[in-house]
Length: 129
View 1: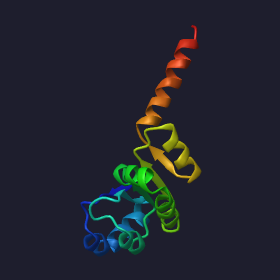
View 2 (view 1 turned 90 degrees about the vertical axis):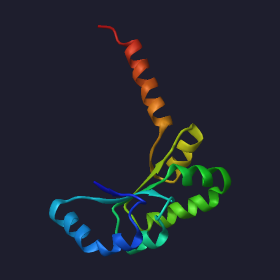
View 3 (view 1 turned 120 degrees about the vertical axis):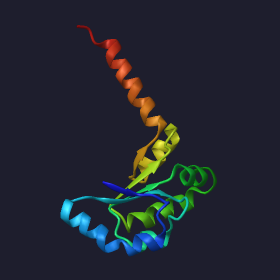
């Protein structure tokens, strides 16, 4: 996976479109847009380039989750029409986990790490050798 971040401007990514597609084809690399919602990431970029995946920034997720879940759902729905996989960054609570699960999005965040650690600790505490 090759992740492009908001440091890449719309113009430079579109100008590199041919080279990025060649890398994708020649090496089987997926092209992802990271940190959508901050910096230069925008809807024009998502529409102009055929990304394999997109990661919604935790800042955008937290803001819209707190202030406008309807808009957040519409953004996710639009993105799903443009990319194969969406990952939502910053999942730090059970409520946010459930929201992402309802939207059928992959997720990453502190909450998931805590759940994993709790499960591992429970397994370790119940295993006898």
